[in-house]
Image: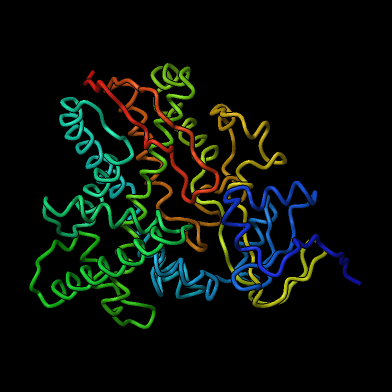
Length: 419
């Protein structure tokens, strides 16, 4: 007989409110309480959900024979963060075929291209910052990355539109874990952006808008699905947003990176002396240590037994991203900021999952992870070698309840100077 045991169960008919009130620590708190990396709860109208964390849990979560994304993302997430029928909601051949398109934008040549754009935009922004009394770093970076995203993808945008589109793109990821005004701002922004991009896609296909065949916009507009058919304009608009939005969302990581240099002042000199090699160690530790998105959700594809528990078809499975990146079985002193932990560390797709786990090409691991790392290395070099500034007294603590989290002040800088 296969080994079975009763796993811990969180009491309550529906614990969605508790999850939202505890944010990043909801799963970790119960893992500590139960002494297990596996427990059952009920969310989203009382539906059963199995919460898991740790390396072996990540392997199970990304096993496509056991777990699927179809029908898993709550509607409120599809209406804000992902969009309907987006790549994140696909499985099997349909997902792999569309994933090939996204991975084609992550070649060294394309990453070098977008890196050059970012460096140029930082230089342009610095000319503006040096004449301002103060800047809110996060706000500046959101607009800066919006410019980078539009230039790289080839989506046309007027100069006077940038601030508006930046705010709309920010709303897509800022509303991911929100209720009330923030949620409705995200939904409204998605509707506006999708309708606007649909018009652009139609213009490209009708020949009313000429764009280079080398651009991401052109390639997505003429992309054919696994049956050799063009996607409808609505879905193309959704997937173009799945390029634009994640680029702007890197602003969260970049803000935490700047905060890390402030909170750990000895890192500045290490970054100066250590060059690109130490930059990468530092960047990876920022991605591990600071909160980005707390968890991922999927559904059981077929019944299976794991760790003595029966996973039943259709049940939710929630993977603790933040908890896995701070798991004491994986990381020594996980709540200490220490870039050296990544020196000589072998890449493991199931231990370190700030933007998801598993294989890049076959699984749901974020294809933009390489781009994120490059952007963060560029910013590290910029902050320690190209600019000086002061950090005045402010509320730079960040919430572990608000999703996504950010320093409350947005990280205010004064007396910005070019080095």
